[in-house]
Image (cartoon, rainbow, N blue to C red; front, side, top):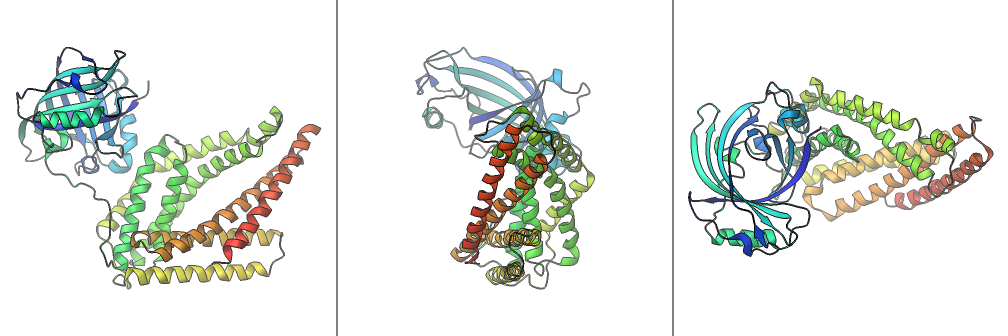
Length: 498
């Protein structure tokens, strides 16, 4: 049985030891409570020597006692007080006590090749009261904890404290339950917690990752490093989702790679090129590997779209989509293998090192706005050059179609350059980005129709299908031809503003 994940929504308060808790049966949606039950919980927390998990507000522990004994991985879920908790029972974990692979995989983009070691031992005497709703179902859990913790880090110390935790249960709590519980518990003596988790309090300060941001008048180097940090965070966020083949994750991770590359190529003199060129090459390789999986995803979606509102036979469905699933599975396995390699982890280390200590190029001190203006002007000039080449080609020819694809790639780079300026919050950059996106989207739609028509022609020429299936293929081809023409019209309209 695989690890199970749930969303954890809870409140936490520091409180004096032995302080009496209020009667929470007065909360909205609560009509009763179970008798308090006391457990002894013993947990060992694991992290790298650098505290890569704790620095990202993640906890990984092995805990005995209570109803959920086993391994737990807790990660932020976006909203304050909300975390995703991945659980694995001892009967499903390695018998040797090693950290289970199922819990390493979601955070391996942070831990990489670094060893996970015990960093804290926490013992808790927990008294739990379960609050019940009108139907007798559990709606919340209130825990009164007496905690003793020993840091296992060099120079670590021993601590004792008391705290209250209030956690929502079930899928449909009363809308005012959490907010009213917070007011009630604060009024009863609950205080702002000194740490976000028992681990954080046990080990003290950690190198917490700070979201990148810019000052009022940033330099080109500050803008570039901020943008790299944003896309690095996106890449790391998508990593565990790609490992589970989550919807759109491959696409988003590939976009993060491309955006990182666009920063290096769009602002080549802001960073020392001799020290960053290899990063662009590694990101290009990773994007290509992810691209194989992404292309198969796109083709599966295109195949489904082609068959919309059509009375297609099983034979035609098999011809269009039958082999694509197997291709996708192979591509995903190849992506996972690449993401488990030392080369991938070395790339992530190199990006982190660059963010921490960026090697300045000759234009590092240039005003960020000037650097962006130059990058946009250079990109637009390249697009206009490619458009000039397009005008010399015969419309509808293979060369003409390939040139449109080249213009699409140039538009995408322009869009990425303007997106890099998003932290500057300037209207003129957003306008250029919008135009570039329209051009990119229109030419992407045209390219899809072109690929689809070639695919339809190939299947039609195979001689495997019946007359009715050939008729359906003819309808699909006509629809794709019309879609392609609409895309070209949209491109020409948008391209006027480039």
